[in-house]
Length: 335
Image 1 (cartoon, rainbow, N blue to C red):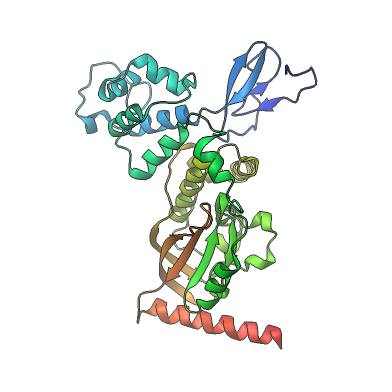
Image 2 (image 1 turned 135 degrees about the horizontal axis):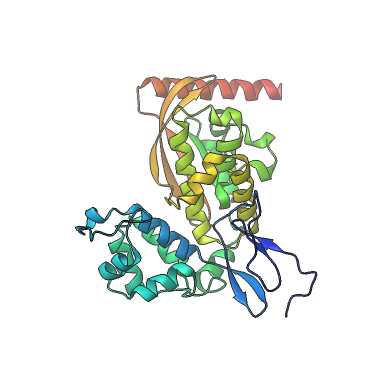
């Protein structure tokens, strides 16, 4: 159906979209990185070009000397590999790279994706994200299977909550889509924030990390933690690029925080697996905690994050103190 004259205009990355034109810059508009524009007849429609955006970003991060390329004497207008250099190393045509980056080629074969990944020195998470961007039918296949899961990450099974509640000396939370905290145990809430007092729409771990002052002050190295959170959210976006709530979250954070806006544009991706964090807790004091991610097989969107301390360490004592303080607080609240 051809849109009528009152069809709402769309803006993305400073573009105002309307009949018969690609649009003009709009001050203050936000590029969520989740869509791009294509002319169809007299109208411009939104289409996905995350594949092209991601390829350009990865290409800009590769230094030619890393791949043994010698300078040709031409000055580089932008950092990283030129399109023709990427095409040469990957064994594809320059025109094909151009079409991929411009969104005119919507997908690529596994062999081509593998060649591009090797040429760009992509890490495993980055390669997985590249493959996700190149899925031929975003409304079908594995994406449909993921979307048809029981809760799409919003709820946890009662047995999962029972497991959380039985974990008295480790802090644990369950992340769903958009890094939303969908379940937690008492120590997890005591460590980070009382999630139960927050509206469900404000429980995204990324949102809290950037916009909640108490959570922002919790991390000794906030910038590293925050950049990791952005990479986690970008990885999530690769699985569900058409999620309107994700788009709204990215728009809100881009408007309200310049660091998020800059780091989102970097297209860094990372899956949550394991690591450690330094906390500056207002009650327990400094803590160094390891974390690991455990996938919940019942829902492909859900991941349990478990925070533990090295045995017999100062952090272990502080975590036990926080657990005891949390237990005493719960008893007092029931009295």
